Length: 442
Image (cartoon, rainbow, N blue to C red; front, top):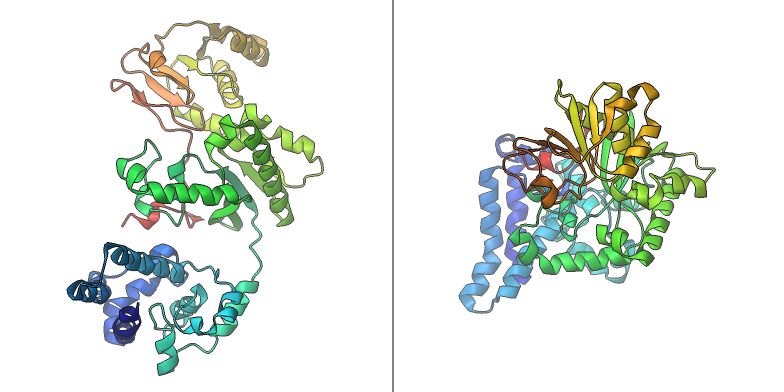
């Protein structure tokens, strides 16, 4: 750390000041400063020449201890982790360093910067040049005069008041890496089966994150978006599928966390709260109806998205098809889809007798003839749930199109058939700050 505080911080400070000279800034460093409102990913957005110079600086401590025989594998990985952690911290655009830390350790303010400290560099451009340690800004008089004021104001800032809140939850243990502090490349791909490098190499971090989420009992904000004049937020409950599906006691705690999140959204002035994934399961809480009954004076509107999901599924069925099979347990979405298809004159095949009787009651008398009870697998369009097993899929004829209407996609066993994605829609252009993919693509 002495090698970092000495040559690395010193050389970086003067390199950084040089990069703000008009000649180098216009040709190189302006690319990094195009992000005035920074995000963690901003920390690694640099032109190639800058990246090489930073790597050379960061190699100074590692090469030195290697040549002197005083280093270790732990120290190498520890130093790299320190660089990544501090780099992301400075660009997270959210002040999270408590005031008490600097009160107890006053000298820490010279060797540790804060998110608000570096944020001023991205807004003022000519101040706060230091890498991670503000010491050199103090020495050479380039510390912004408003640093302490902005830091105090950032700590006192009230939370945003969203118009719409989408309440979801973690799914598998690896889903933690799909958050902003995870891996952009991993989050840009659909979450399917675990890759070996995520399953084994990241196992200690995965288990540690699961322990942290277990002790954290409140929903947290994972994403903030804007759509025209609306402010939208995505909140995640720190629990996994296994807690909701398999543990009775955990379910009770989980329901309490959902109700607390709904109450918090109402306190913050949200007009609509949408329930995502298992938060709106029919078997769990009757698509949110349970929460409305328990809180009859709720002003925030609860939405489960069933109607929109049904519309997307209907739109996924190719035109001209007159036969469709529903191969899944009855649900709100499947019922909507079946009734709509019968109204269109499409023959809908149901394999379960109880589901068939229930759907006949929902259909208008003039459309009930389009609903048939049959275990036939000859239909080329199958509407399926996430529990579709291999034994059922092998019965489908070659070229069958599987269209899921479930929250999670079914496993793909057939290579001679086609699988659609779970119900989803493209985001409009004026839906801003969409996470994950845009941070990785050119």
